Image (cartoon, rainbow, N blue to C red):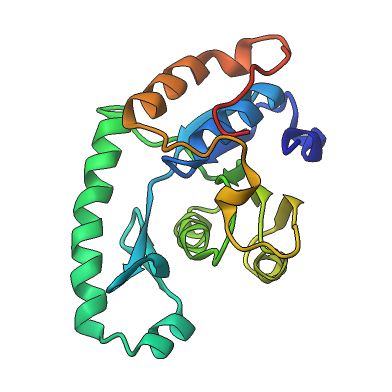
Length: 216
């Protein structure tokens, strides 16, 4: 469904699909295959609010980028020290995942390329905002955020942050990303590495029908 919203990016050598692991990787893999585009990961970590870990108070990304959701911080009375403590723990995990997924392989070049950032969905959008903020200084020719499902208000908010936002579905009421998948099992590090390896030949392959993704 998401790839069908992106036909103008098919079979272009300048297009790079970035997955936000782990959850965005199965989605990005299918989109990259359908578009015959290069695929890589862009590691971002959500900053879960103290005592409410599932609620994002912000996110961090490679390059020292930190994005904070001031409304959540104000609502819960979260202090700067608490933000810093959570960020330190997530920075360690961010570094681990970069090594785990990429090894010695350098990050893909972003400058002057069309970059499509993909996750499994947008709720608050904090994680995706951190990714976009980290990529913008690298001067992509076009920065696109694409997700299968999103809260309508979050989708609209992104229009000022990126060159294009594509949300295949914006159901009402939204409630949570996982409600809109038949299979929302957690993606493992092994699956991320495996899909990255399989995707290395995408730009050279003829178009094929995508296989069913884990997240459907």
